[in-house]
Length: 151
Image (cartoon, rainbow, N blue to C red; front, side, top):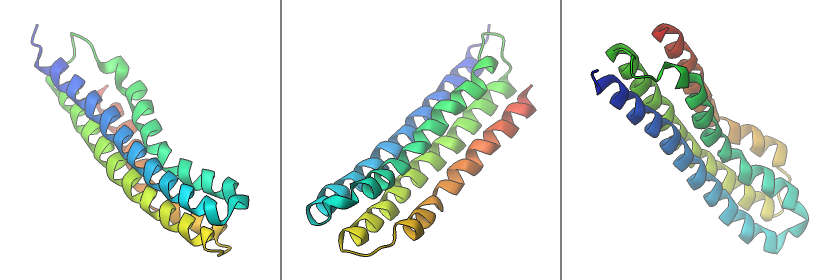
């Protein structure tokens, strides 16, 4: 048995779940830190703050769901192409989740700061905050396509 395909796949899964989870952790922390400051000025806006703080958490969920999409490919009998495909798909979604989660957290933090300053912008801010997530969604959809190519 050649362990190379399986090794590539495990590295891909690690990158997939780990990087997207890091993006969510960083993004939600950045937004939550802004929420703590804004709550001092506008405690009545807690609902808006919690939604914006939680939004960057979705990238980690995409990474976890990506594991379920790929898990049935992972076996001792997998081919080198399958191992490389899992690695490539994992790297793509992992990096997209990392960076989109981090930057979505920054957009959310700016939105929270603005709401905390008295601006009534929650709906518009939510729309703007979804833009960075689009790229994690595209990477997640690409993982489905990669999965289809690998059999």
